[in-house]
Length: 194
Length: 194
DNA sequence: AAGAAATCTTGATTTACATCAAGAAATTAA
DNA sequence: TTAATTTCTTGATGTAAATCAAGATTTCTT
Image 1: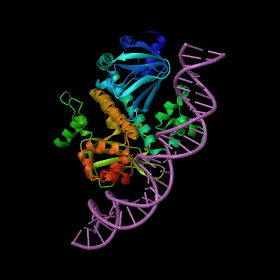
Image 2: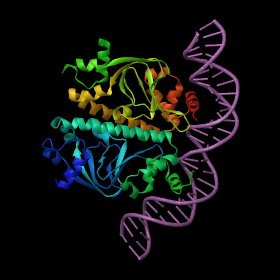
Image 3: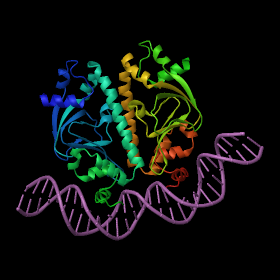
Image 4: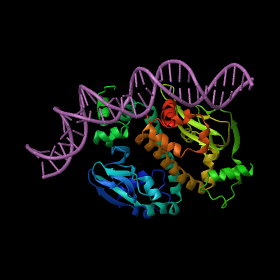
């Protein structure tokens, strides 16, 4: 475990006070893995075995609708968490696919290690409460934008705050995340208010 | 504090082991309040001061879109939590309105008492982590349904699992929650696949 | 119980965005 | 570099659901 990785982990778990306890056992739980451009990390029907921190690259979680179209649920990239969370926590086959959009390096934590954290280090429950609270609020905000805004408004609002790593991936993923077709996305980009 | 209320609280905080500690101080934190049919509980622009457990009645959280249409984000009813959560936690004016659809009795907990819980009773952090985790998964599932399903599919899926208390409120609220107009909802009810 | 208010229904019309199609541009792989 | 592949653009057309409108029904209020 290199110091750069330890720093990455500490940043990802920002609400934990890492000066308080000895967390060496926690750091040792993580192992590195790599995925190629376009590689599927966790496929539909599998049980998610890992919780990830992204070292490098962009990953996408999508679901297939009944016409076989990919519907992007979310992204992960440098510094953020990744994985298919409900499958991981409930140990049940996933409806989603986690795919590596660009070549990626991830730090992986198994479910067994993840769950052991909360008994081993009491402060992780506090982290979990606050982290999930913020994730929940973020998800509701996205839901509001999907419900209340037009395609054009969703486009403009998203582009105004688009994280740097997402500016490098094919636009079809952003279009899908914004719940519109690549054609619509393309037209909005040219500022043709459709 | 009556024993029926204590039972209600214990059920709402299902993941807490109430046999382990003395929670009398916790029970005493709650106070009862009532709202009339159609009464606004927390209005747009206010800071939410309360976290609620519903004793009786149906409440709705909605946001106004730019045309002034109510967009229903969620419901609460007998036994569930209520309140405008992000405003409560972040102490900032809300974009939403919390309104009492039917005459309601709620048990209220102030933010000060809520936040004191986690230091007073360590097991509440565990509760918070797991409760928020499940809320998050539920919210993502709703998002998926909004994105991947047609109005007809959303209607059928929702009606198949519609909680009893919601069967008594005006259909326009359900329609809005399903992100469709009352007219569309009405047509789907007659099984006219539009 | 009667009147008022809100809600629901049904049909006609509109519209935002999807779909289809095909060529242009960019990116990847050899 | 060049061919192959993927992605992006642009126009023409289609459609699910919204909007508009107005009468019918239900629910509240007194």
